[in-house]
Length: 297
Image (cartoon, rainbow, N blue to C red; front, top):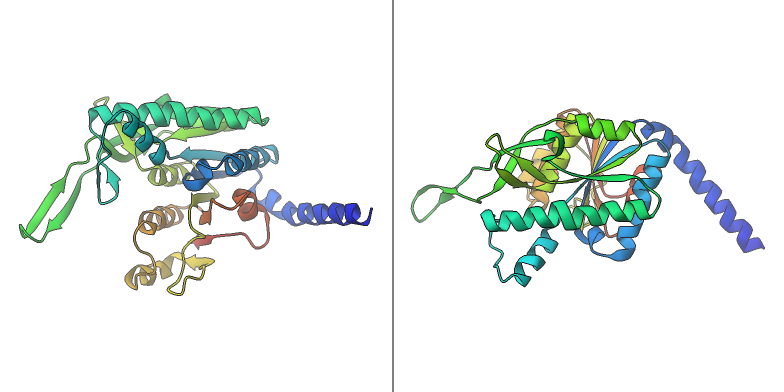
């Protein structure tokens, strides 16, 4: 009996700690980039779905943007088509774009939607094509070629960047108690379909929706210093030094860029958190300590 009472008291303490944060985020929008291990481990997937359902239940408006790189690569391999990357970015020809759209807009998106709905939520799957949500343009990248001693243009094919976002369909779903789940596919003015980095879509949505918070789920604890220790909070005006001394490098650069751009554009805070941790979203939003790295304006 004593153990049961202790467990009940612990539950009450946790709920009491969460109350001010529930009030803080009630009625506010939180955009979540969902990817990495959190999308591949069954227990983490279930925990993520439960987290967004709880958020919606207490009055927060979660908007989920998901990736799906590993799933795309697996299907390409099964079909005998080689995945080709330049500087970590997938080269997407017309045939690959069809597969990307099938995986992101179909297989992955509907799996997430189905999981949320099976656990009692009300999710709706979208791509950037739905409701003219994401207007995209072709991504143009140049880099210096030391051999040719000039810049070269890199053609990634059907890879795009966000040109504009029309938030009406997402806002409508929010008011009707649905959870939008968005695949990062956009459409150009010429009707061409583009694959867009999910971090960039999440950041663009957070800005357009005037979100209270942007959360990026990753496979690391957050931004780490040179000794491998977590940097819990960093101000936007201190970010330059972290880039210059190499603290922010490699695959963390685009995530920090996205998070920083969002807060500079008016999102109150952005957080890069460890999606490998069970119930990472609830720990970040509704506890005193939080997890990961928070970037503040």
